[in-house]
Image (cartoon, rainbow, N blue to C red; front, side, top):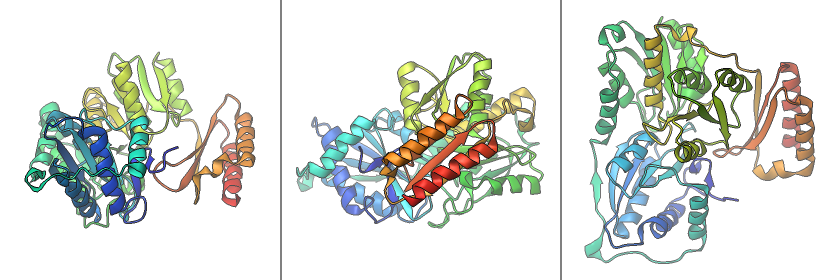
Length: 440
């Protein structure tokens, strides 16, 4: 079982174990040993960050360690996670690092790693890095004349932005008539997203685009979609779009203020021809699965985490996958979730259909009840008494729903999700499990 890495890199409260400068130092050395020490070729690492105040500390800590080992470091400044994936591969860097805690509050931070192909690391690679972090004491520091250099790249965000303006060719006579609300979550897309949408001709009402280091995800973005809904209605907008702090998630709001989940977005994108399979996770809604089944599309379910979706897409030559939370991967574009690309792609599909988003709700989701239990030890769900209650509750749902109880990979929580035909039954099941875990 991994001790440092969760579902999306190493994440925690900044300056509190495991997210300390000491761990950063050991991580850099482990990364060097695992990925960079096998030949004498000079190596380059790209490092990006979101807008949280602690980003500078971890950026400079990692850069110093890599340079001391003779690695050149290109600092891409504030940039979304998918840009690290795309630019690492595009420019032939040996590794990409993103400093972000995604949708978490500002006091958290995290470190995500991408290999030279722009892919997130596998479980096996993360376990090997952990072994090196805890057990490797080798010194890789070079002599002064071989120090790595730090290069400040002030154009990386423009390179990433240009991808969208080349790929999407909207009719500006159409887009100039559309008023949209854009919530950048005071995060990594705060400059790029409004500029891209304006350059494509949309009339943009831009919200939460003034980060101050502590307001990232603060009552905004995909974790607070009610703010987007209210803004769409108050501004009589045609639709709204929201991102998370590092720009790899997206949610859409229709003109009536109703939200489209990640699965609604996948359903719309699946209208393009050629899809025999779509990939999601075990959290996929039962109603979404049945909708795809009626269309002859198979739903593949992986473990929770967009990197598991990415792995399946890559190894099975499938192009579309995503999570209900709004991680959408179009593998022909990038091997990781890209909120800006997915948002523009679903808008393109909406315009092509000549319908409004409210008319593109393609399935009725199965009723669902979700609740999180805050815990100090996530292994509590291995308690035999709790396992027995979970088994009994699953038996109550039979084949007319599902129950998932799992530890969060990013926060000290146990997440409980129940789906089925009877909302009262679902609430009862979730409350029973919640109480049992809370009292354990």
